[in-house]
Image (cartoon, rainbow, N blue to C red; front, side):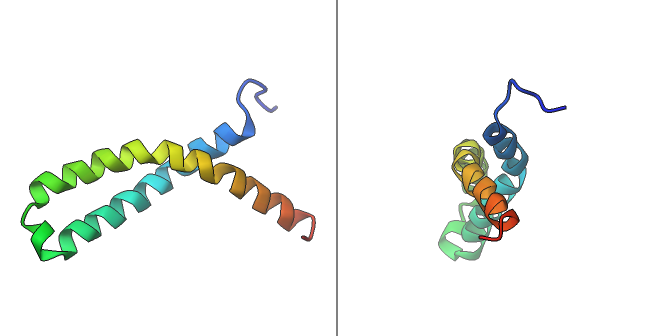
Length: 79
């Protein structure tokens, strides 16, 4: 039975928020640790990467959710 109080976009955004956060953190951590000038300041920059990734996760997931839903509908109808 489908929950009528939460729209499909919200469910999709919540489901993809964990992978989105992992990608954001991974990209930020690789950038910080692979650049020597930034690696020296890693103990300050990695917490900033974590906070920034958490702050950006839900808005980014919210933007991606309709695109994922549209892609699924297009694949099902042969478009």
